[in-house]
Image (cartoon, rainbow, N blue to C red):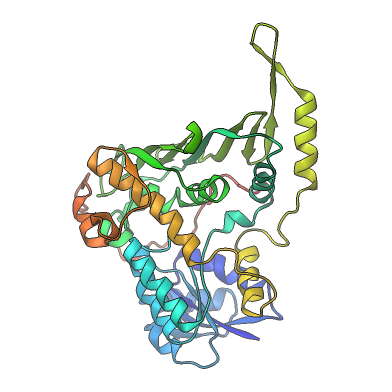
Length: 385
């Protein structure tokens, strides 16, 4: 039986707890850690965990019966907590985004390599059937080359969203919607079609006056062979629709799943191609999906990897690669020019302090609260359909 500590008991912690509870014969949540112990005690009671509550997570890391931790803190605190856990001999699962800088990611990866423990970065949408199946079709080559892809991360947040003390600041949150919301879609895009050669991007704050960071961004990615992709990240989009669309030589594939295909008439104009649609639908239906979806799928993979049953599917290097693409978007927006990959460790955008000093402050944060009484969250469109 594996002992789990959850570090940080904000809204996403409940998702981790529920996922760990889905493995009652394999793990048990033994510790909840938060600077605000009442929050931890409330979760402890809600889920009847019988866990010990700690204000300082380092005390929990001293326990020999803790085998792994879920790091559910703000992004600026991920590095310190993950490194402390790994150095204490614990495996670590870190919420997205992995960290606030590539330098911090590399520190976490070094700690994992040195300790021999697992470091996994949450990318729960990889563990949903449409994403897995579409990736399988694309990698098979049976839909042809990717010509254009679009990742739409469209969310809506009210003005009070940024009243929470750490949100809407470069130092506390590390970024705006590009880093903290679009990371899901950016990760799926990169996982499916790889890193681009370069990116050109713009960011803006259109409607959130209590935030230094962006609530809107658009990026254009250039791939070898002439393919392009675009990423739109937004907190001003009613309906909160998220999707990934891949235009291949033969069809349009998307997550959530849909397939559309066209063939040319004699004059070059399109008509439907039902035969290709049926063929690709059959491939989709036959492609394997995950045993469990979302966070339970990923945390189950972590447990299996700890026991040597299967490889770790999302490790620290995967989390770092997705962050590198996001940092490239910020660098391009700040400098007003295309940015090529990879980013060099000597680049000012490799480190948090020099990157954040270069970013625009759209507004001054003037309102700050410690906690919200309403702890409910929405997760937008279900990427698993």
